[in-house]
Length: 264
Image (cartoon, rainbow, N blue to C red):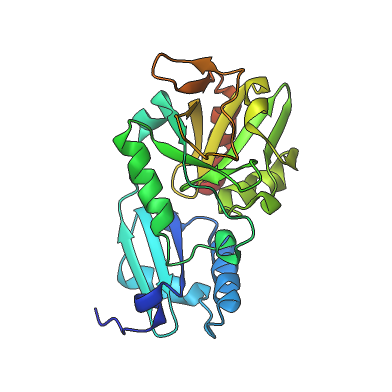
């Protein structure tokens, strides 16, 4: 592979998309390409990736199931395939989330695209894994819930679904968009003190689809000065605070409907 040493390589000036491939078909491809091309325009990169680019690659490199990644900079367009890391046992167990010490910057335009400069997300996800959690959760500089390091988040109270508004500083994920187009969801600002009021929580992204969340933990020092340790949470001897969620019915219902959608 011949990679040119442009601003994408040197400074992360570029964008990428990760697309689920199911039964040989890239899922929600139009949504991914719309977001990718929008990101390239915002970065001042005069390139467009279209369906023929993807279909041409898949015709030469057939994939039944997996994850297709497109990385684009001014001088490079790189497409690669890897395995989808999620399996049935993940959905049985669910994800536990830990609140990141890093605040999401809702004022930065890079927050709203999948920039090649993705180190912050990767480092926080790895840190969460080292602590025994599946995902890191970001609040923004105003103390409002934003997103996970690789996911969007939804919360249910009664019969209503809620998700952080885009203005809270988050990527408009393709599964997030899919859900908002098909279900009544209120986009709003959600703060740590309110988390106890929700009955069910789930996270989404293009590879895992919809994943139930079993708990959200605040560790000492997290988001100092902006996200306060919620007094309504369960406190552990270690000084951690946790919200626990037993509900998963809505997440699994939406996941089943999503699987039916991509198999049709």
